[in-house]
Amino acid sequence: MSAIAPERAGVTTQAMEEGQPLRLAPNYWPFVIPALVVVGAVIVFPWAFTLWMSINSWTLGQSRSFAGMENYLRLASDPRFWESLWHTLTYTFLSVIAPMFFGTVAALIFDARFPLRGLLRGVFVMPMMATPVAVALVWTMMFHPQLGVLNYLLSLVGVPAQEWIFNANTVIPSLVAVETWQWTPLVMLIVLGGLASVPREPFESAEIDGANAWQQFRYLTLPMIAPFLMIAVIIRTIDALKSFDIIYAMTQGGPGTASETINIYLYNTAFSYYDMGYGSAMAVVFFIVIVALSFILLMLRQRSQWVDAEGK
Amino acid sequence: MGSRLLNKIGLFFAALVLVSPAILFFLWMVSLSLKFEIDNGAYPPILIPERFAWSNYAKVFEENNFLLYLWNSVLVTGTATLLALLIGVPAGYGIARLKAERSAIVIMIARMTPGLSYLIPLFLLFQWLGILGTLWPQIIIHLVVTVPIVVWVMIGYFETTPMELEEAASIDGASSWQVFRLVALPIAKPGIVVAFILSIIFSWNNFVFGVVLASRETRTLPVAVYNMLSYEQVSWGPLAAAALVVTLPVLVLTMFAQRQIVAGLTAGAVKGG
Image (cartoon, rainbow over all chains, first blue to last red; front, side):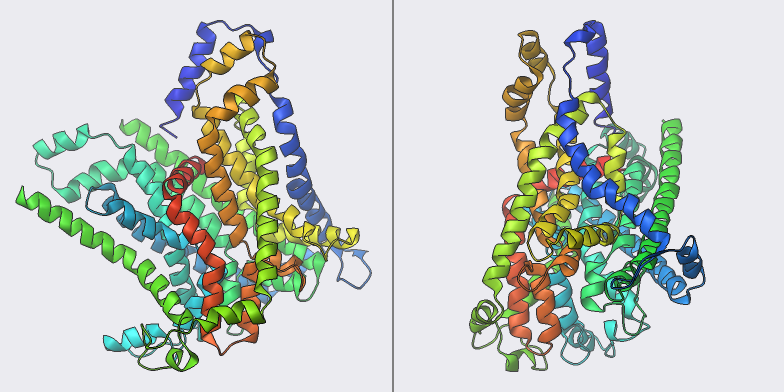
């Protein structure tokens, strides 16, 4: 971002100064066209088809018929859909807050110098690279109410045994714990990138003025890394909304429908009940939810940058 | 001086606390995979058993056709990554040079789109084409994962490589293809390595595409492991061994290419907003 902008500006001004004639500019479109074709085939076509499917009624094995807005109206009056929307929002909110907190703390620590820093950072990043299904499977064993290692660890500090993902009341927080375990490193990396771009001088003068560590963090570091924190929030929000692997592999939306998010309900509708038209309508609404939330966050980010720029 | 040393030790322990959930998880995963049923069912739990159950690993490969699924994973991830490099590296170059920043939005939208919404139409298309029993549906749909990663990383990389050499070459009469092939591409090697590694990892880990598109013969490893879960509720040892087999290649790659991965993800993510 800020690190790249000056460079870009440099390139443009240089080209203008040299007064480069237009005919010398090479044609770059042939490089892009193959990718455009593939993107069209695997990304744009499915979107167009999904939109079309969503106004049709079609369960695999039966005949298709035009349905107009029927699927969307059915969605609006489907309590299971509203319930899954609520689960999605709860899950997302918690899965943004927790990794943001731990990731920021981790970035502040890994930004400093200490022995074995590189090795520890490498291990810290590993969870986000591990295969989600494999991770989910081991967590499922650890959550086991009788034989799981987590309840044993809790018993050591005198906390009663929990039912974790096997109880409707604790299933979402338990899944969020796994999501947090896996995705905190991404937040750490983004914030670490932000910290690397923070200049030293303000801290030196703050130190001379007698500001303590908390004041330095609150009034210098935090405002300067705010844009990076916003980026982390946006990426985390998108990924948490879309979360599928962990939830599906661990609970398949259960117990009952206690952890059924939109993505899981969508999967069940399309590939368990093969109700393609209704599933498509759900996909469209789900995408709108994701875009709307991202857009709100992007607006907030724009504002935070604006305030930031004014502050300077 | 003394307080500084103390400070460093304090930071080290703070970092250790933060890393401990990862360390404990992977230790426990290894422990589960090396224990016989009786040890895995013991209470209080045993971390290091008296006898190691190496047979758990043998069982995974003997009873579950894991060699076939491993091969499927290699084919799907390998082909999808190579195809993505083939079209994504030139595309990243073109977009960076065209300064077509709007195209970045397309990639952002691709990131926002839930994988399932690609699956409904493509599933119907593959069914209509009659290729559902082969690996091709999975290879094609994995492009949804690999192409945006490669393009994303390469845009970032080509934006930071100097233009002077390319300009000099084109003044000397090189065609734009020659400029790309002989000047830009060799400089971009480190970027290609980053794109390659990230593409491999995220394609290898993908689960949702396989769970819908794979048949018994065309499962990839994550799907195979998931299927073990539903059939072998009870035997934890082989299950954990299978989970480790699936994720080990990725973890090894992460360890060896840590620097590139961190660089790629930081750059990609930072520009992701």
